[in-house]
Image (cartoon, rainbow, N blue to C red; front, side, top):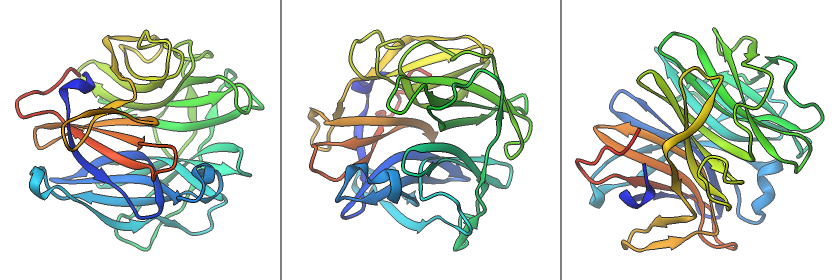
Length: 305
C-alpha cells in the first residue's frame, strides 16, 4: 500500500478548529469518522481542550463527496479534561469507543465506553486496566489505543507508552475477552524495538497488519518520520510488511499535485463499498488549521493489505 497509488478524495474540517486522529468505521452501508478537535489558537491545545466529534461521509462520487458533522460526544461525569485518539469499533449492535484521556495536561490513560451514536449523552467513560509487569512506570501512557476484535473472538490492542515525558515512544500489545474488563499484557517487552506511535490495526486473513508513525525508521527503513506498515502472525512477534514504506509527509492534493505537509500523522484505512480509503491527520503549514485528509485508490486498484 503506497501513497503514490492514491488520489485525493475529501478534506474534513471545522472552521477555526484543529482536527486530528481520524477513526473511520461503518454501520451497514454508512461510513462514519470520529475525530478529535480543539480551538485553532493553540496547536498544543489538545492537551487540555480536545473534544471528540462525529462525521458521516455521504458519497464516493467526487462531485458529491462531503462529510457532514453530526455531533460532539458528551460524557457525563468524565474525569478527563481532554479526550484524543478515538477509535470506535463495532461489535454486533454495540459501538465501543476507545480513546486517550488526558490528566493534568501531561499524563494519559486509555478510556473505554459503550457509545450511543444518537443520544446527547454518548455514554460513560471508564479507565481501562492493563495488567502486566512490562509497562514502564513514570512516563506517558498507556495511550494511543488501536483495538481490533479478532476472528477468534478475542479483543487485542496495540498502544503507546513513553519511558518518560517526552521520551522515546514504544508500542505494546494487550488482549481481553471483554473490552470493558481487565486487559492483559502480551509479553513483557515492546512488540518491536523503535520509536513508534499512532498504530492502526486490522485483520487480513490469518495475519494482523498495522499502520504506524515510524519516527526512527525501524519499520519503513527511512531515517525520518514516515508512515510504515508492519504485520504479525501471533501478536508476539511483529515485523515490517513486505512493502513497509507507505508515505513520507507528501500526499496527493485535490488538484492532483503531491505536496509536502508540515505534519502528517494518525494513519487509518478502511474498505467501504469495494473501495480502499486512507485517512490522515494533516497540518499543511504551521499556521493553518489541521484537517483530516481522505484518500482513495482509483477503481479496480485494491492495494496491498
